[in-house]
Length: 164
Image 1: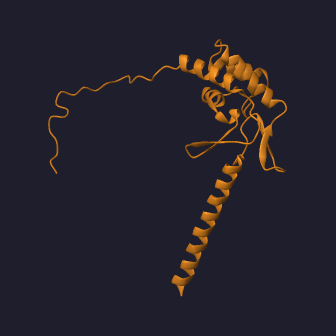
Image 2 (image 1 turned 90 degrees about the horizontal axis):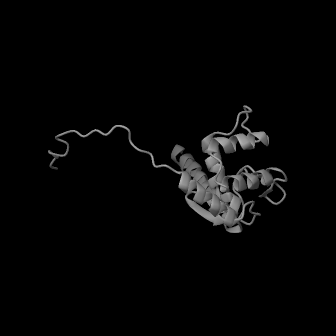
Image 3 (image 1 turned 180 degrees about the horizontal axis):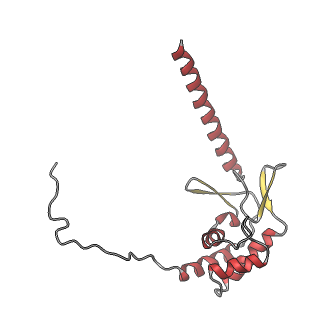
């Protein structure tokens, strides 16, 4: 009797999982945003999608324009945004990783990410593709590869191997 109850609950759980996955796929096909809106957008429950925020969208565009000039670092751009009242919950300027995430987020071009794939969204993009590409070029020129500080070069490494 207990096995029948477990079988029914397993069937319910699997069916629920399939229904949720189907709903997510349908939203992606329609180009709708799946969860909370990124900075610069607001969730609109009436249309179940995101829309550009009246003021924050202009701040995002301004941040992209300033960084595209090439005169800003992540820290100086965070301070620039802090002057425009874009700060963390603790009232401190944004961290460098948050600035990089802001500048590389393809949602501002009108794309939706699910897993490792990007899908076309049906919401209004905040940034033009030309401005986004200009920022990506500046990011690429300023990027430095990480180097390993300590290299261990042991004399007999690789001399013996396990034979299986």
